Image 1 (tube, rainbow, N blue to C red):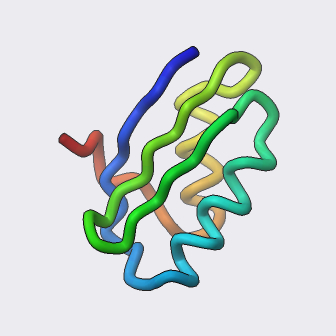
Image 2 (image 1 turned 180 degrees about the horizontal axis):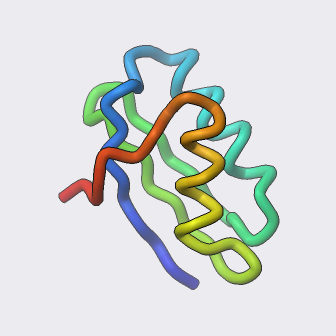
Image 3 (image 1 turned 180 degrees about the vertical axis):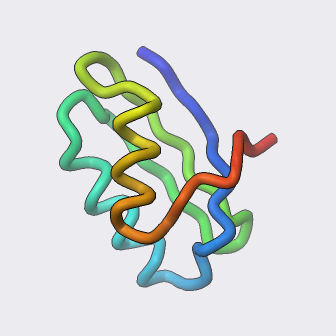
Length: 71
């Protein structure tokens, strides 16, 4: 099980949070998603077949591209 935290500057409201969480949890292998408009970040817990490349690609596809790893 892997957990990563990404910085996503485009998160601005509860709708953004809902969209990200709804889309990512559908990705096979993703077990938990916690997005935050306050910190403009998302924490994703996953296992194969999901990987960081697939997660980042999906976020970019739904217009929430990853700016980098969040601290």
